[in-house]
Amino acid sequence: MAYPETSEPDLEERELELAMREAELNRREAALRRTELGDDGPALIPGRHDELEVELTQRIAMLERREKELLRTVEAVDAQRQRLEDVRADYEARRDTLALRAQEVEAERDRLREQQARLVSASLELQTRQTEAAVAAAVAAARAKPIDPIPATTDALEIPPAPPVPERPLTIDDWWAKQLGSPLEAA
Image 1 (cartoon, rainbow, N blue to C red):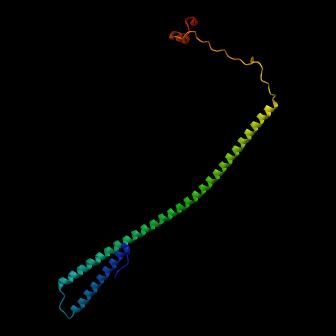
Image 2 (spheres, helix red, strand yellow):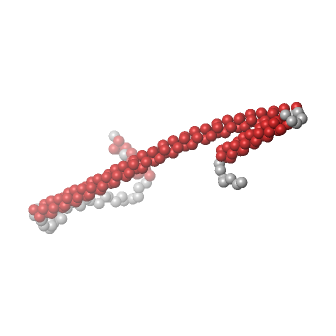
Image 3 (cartoon, helix red, strand yellow):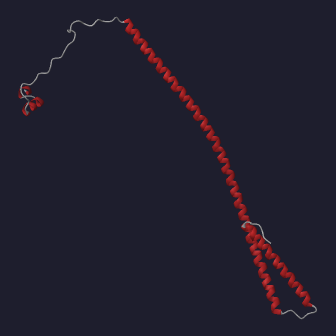
């Protein structure tokens, strides 16, 4: 008989169940042999009967230990499954909270961008008005001021004299004298 694929705890439970069935069948067989041989037949072989009892007792003890181990394993798996469910629920709650916070931050960022755009627009408009006002004032001042004719003489213009041209090229002594002053200037 083929069993469908199952997890390890299910296989262990089936093995335990099969071992228990086998032990029960062995007990029944032993009881049947005792009844058959007990009254009419020859006496049981003393060594063989004791060996079966010892073996049966050992197998029952082994099965009980295995059953306890399986129960502990099942409890551990259930506890681990519960912890996993708790962690998953916590994760989903945090994810939902983060999604809501992300939406709030996005809305706040959009609001700030819109406000910044309004401020930039108002600043440009104010700057344009100030420039227009300055240009209008300059034009009005230019219209109000009479135009001066260009002076006919160049007397009003002062042209600085050209620097004197040295008669000979400067020597190093001349340069130092210029830098430090001549002996006559020092006194």
